[in-house]
Image (tube, rainbow, N blue to C red; front, side, top):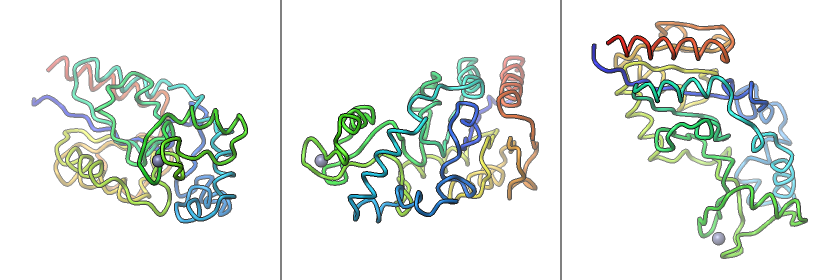
Length: 246
Ligand code: ZN
């Protein structure tokens, strides 16, 4: 058997055990609250200082930065360390795959990261923690320290395009992997969801680990409805054992 290349597409469901709610999915907090959605919509954020002030307060209050990786994140790191080639494509902005110990370059963040801020004028990139320190110290809408431009989280806001380079890399992984595991994602947000279909078309074994049905269930070779925190470690440890047995 050829050595497996395991691609993991992760969504909000992998991080709920870490205390991070689903913000941006179809039933996420932001979609259910149009006022909150404005805080992460590029057009409104850039046009309205009050939206930016509320957005910074929301980030300062968010559990995302303080969250810790959970057993599911750890299981992916274990698979990588077993010698199996692993790539993670994530819809999450929480940085928990890397914090769990996964090699940085093996994680593709489709929607960017909430752990950094970027200047919308000069594109200077700095840690989110520094910007939030300024917010907590009283700056309601901290500007870029280099050029005075508007700062924003390094996430892909509603109304912004995904990074074409990141998306192209994700497509290549979907086409080249032998196993594609979609975990904790409803597979309803495009183009991320289509990666599951592309992987299946190119001959990958498609495994979907999600509590709720998804539009790609009919294409899947295996559906897992059990809780992610126990189901994903069992699945990945099994793949590691099979690979070791060769
Ligand atoms: Zn700047």
